[in-house]
Length: 226
Image (tube, rainbow, N blue to C red; front, side, top):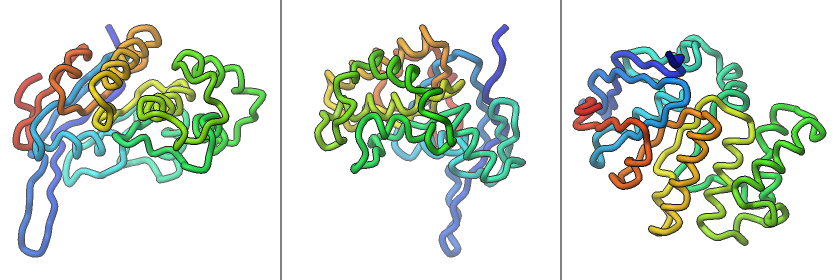
């Protein structure tokens, strides 16, 4: 039986503006097993992106608990959570979030540099990941010199290079055309299948959700279908 790498219980999230309280999440239970590919889908305003950010420790719930890789996020310090992001899980944003004045190689190795690792320890691993993602000939290119698909693959390479157990993805194909979006989804499915990385992805595309091994549908702040 696969280990549970992510478990959330009774997640609620409310936003307060003056006297107006908006309940975005209304008690969500959520779990991901080791090596699972989970797609979270739903209409705009369903709470899917808010849930993803809470699961990844970027946002905090109003109520409820999140256990990521056996650790209660609420009980971790900012420093501990930052270290987990550099070593155990990664986050890929809709817009690649690359550093514009760094090359592909520098962007990809950024989490390793921030973790104060020596280049001799990771150079071969970085090269292998870049070749796997078809970026080996773009090492010295800046983000502005890349196509949209190459930019997103660079962001995925940065997320993958630390050998994470979980990668969170927020609309990873949202800024791409149909063909590049398909290529990225095939790549993610391959990463999940052949590298055993658990993926948790928010998407508005039902077609892209079909690449996942499990689909979770959000409606009005709750899980409507799993």
